[in-house]
Image (cartoon, rainbow, N blue to C red):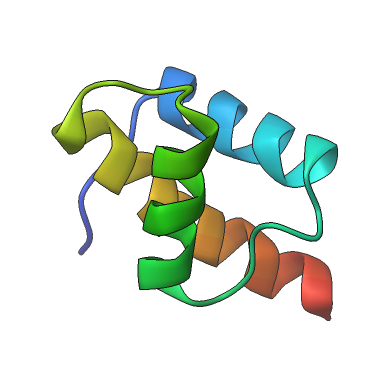
Length: 63
């Protein structure tokens, strides 16, 4: 069983994918770099959680 993410992480990731569909995809490291470039999230831990969940959201939207 996987780890549980908070609603804040989920909502933020979904909104970012909706707002910037060309910046995010299924590659975790590219998502981390894009989040760092956008400077929306300052904390490293939160940025990594959001980048990981964006991978999941982007892969679901692909199909």
